[in-house]
Structures are given as structure tokens and as C-alpha cells.
Length: 99
Image 1 (cartoon, rainbow, N blue to C red):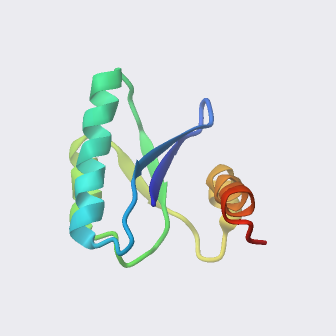
Image 2: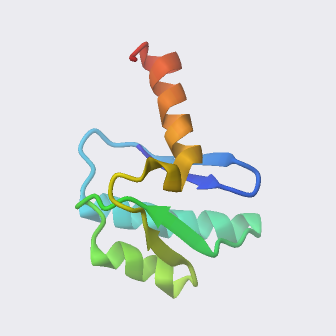
């Protein structure tokens, strides 16, 4: 599942979900996010993402072309993106009954 959090209002946007995400799928999701933001009249300045290998250089380039700076989260620093970390934990507890 690929999600984006708007930190100003803590709104979580679920962009898409796939059993086996690929670099192409993630890049298309970034393009869809940009179109959604344009349709809603929103503006994003930064996107914090982890260092997962499924994010290709094209993913960052698509966002950069839209004027969004990509910030990589620090290694073993869940506090850097704490809102999303709490949301994922809540989903696991409430939806999956997992600890």
C-alpha cells in the first residue's frame, strides 16, 4: 500500500495498493498523486520517503518536476515520519489484529 500524509491536517491519502509493488507501479502512483493534488488545488513542498529499493530515480524525478522535494528518512529513525508510523501501527492493530 502506498500512502501519503498531509502533515498540516494529518490527512492520509491512500494512493494505491498492490500485492507485489514494482518500480513502475510506484512511479505511476507518484504521477497520480500529482494529478490528484492539482485537481484538489493542493500544493506539496516536500515528500518524506523511506529508502526502499522499489523507489526508482524516476520516482524522485517525477516529483522534482512537479516542484516537490524528496527527503529520505534517516536510517532507523521512525520518529522522522512519526505520523505515518502511528497510522501504520493503528491499521495493523485495528484491521489485521496484529501486535
